[in-house]
Image (cartoon, rainbow, N blue to C red):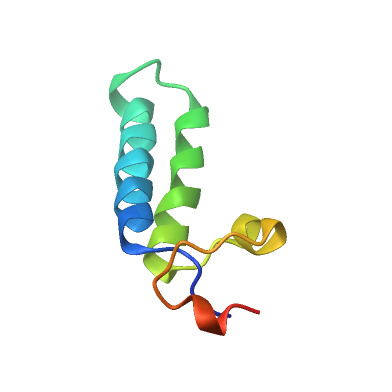
Length: 66
């Protein structure tokens, strides 16, 4: 599993994930905010399965992309 998520992309994923999870507690208070766990997990592991399917790589190490 090669990394395909770059630094800026990871930062944005953490921000979006935290905002979505915060909506569970302070916004409309629906369970849909838990979808924010997905961008958080992909940011922390540095791999996005959707990027792999689409052939996208935002990481600096593009030479090891399979």
